Image (cartoon, rainbow, N blue to C red; front, top):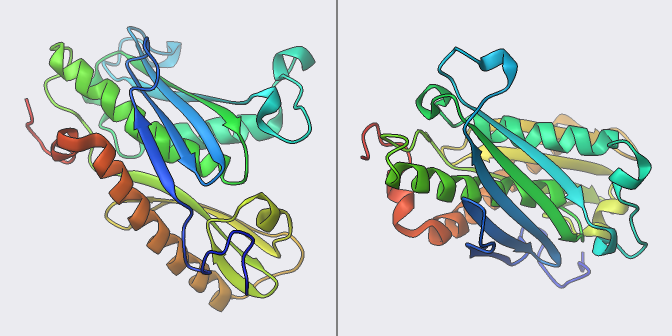
Length: 250
């Protein structure tokens, strides 16, 4: 099929990660996935949630927001509505789970890393781009902590990246833009590690059920896409990438 932007069915959009995008955060990036643009900023806080006080364990959590002009129709700020949408809660928890899955939280000490994801332009894949960018922003923050002597090693065991897949007009597609996503028979988000392990699979038959064979096709597509995105993460991290998975990188 001919895709809207001329890509092949198994081709990801162009991914660009601009490091150190913000001045005051401990780690930040602007990630651009096609026309989707997300600012991810990691900030280290010298305390943990009440349930972790006294445990010696750290925490990683996220906040996610779509700015009013990020979509064609102005999106009302959630602070204006006086409550956070269910979708926002879901995505925030997803980002936090994804990052925590590859970090030894004991080695953080009683500190919290907040990762804020602000969507400044949305064209599909905002949650997956947020996870991919958050990982790089978090790595910058951890590297800064190590250089300050706050931690001995960077306690990260692997990469984490995410991508969307779906079935549109009977065809399995990789990395859906908004129009493809809105017309998808099946819509799925896949979060994986660099070692090819799954962290989370969110899949829905939006318009009709799907078969196990279609599911396997989508998982294969997602794995291909994640591998390509991780190469972009590696390039963005530079020498910091050499510290991933090391037991002693002081």
